Image 1: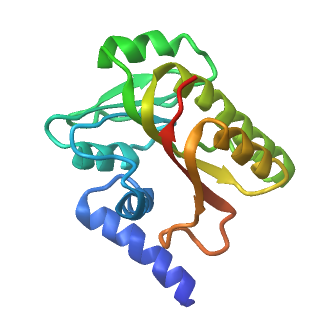
Image 2: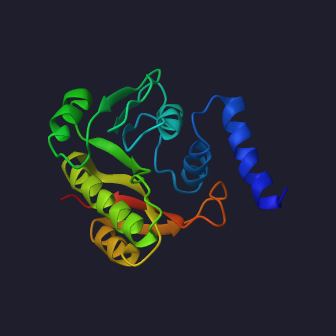
Length: 198
């Protein structure tokens, strides 16, 4: 077994042993350790939350005083201490339901969005970036000033344009590839700190 496969297997095994729904949980843990995207008492919105690994980590990080909601088009099995909404992030009417749950603006928006992958890279990349723009429109309604956000991007032709778009909205935007990501994967993460308000 190649070292790369062994490492990938390690995160999958750890997720299973520690009760996380996906190995992606470790990506959020690692990024949060470096950048404190989510802190105790935070209200956190997870857009594209299926299967729920990031939602689980958000619950841990925000603690007893925090509140967490996940939104996804797919059915997501109930996650203790989180509210899961089956909804489409490309439909801005979900904003109303988000406010119904939180009762106020949120401190962090996290997005680990992926489209239904076609296998045609240019199509998948464009679709994934498009989903991020939809998520950012929801973010503009619900994220509090000085709040934080995290966006996964499939790196490609439109990545820099999306990064520049985010840079106008936040005090600081960093690009990172966590260790839990496969080396061969094109996914990168935009860590966005200090929302300037819409």
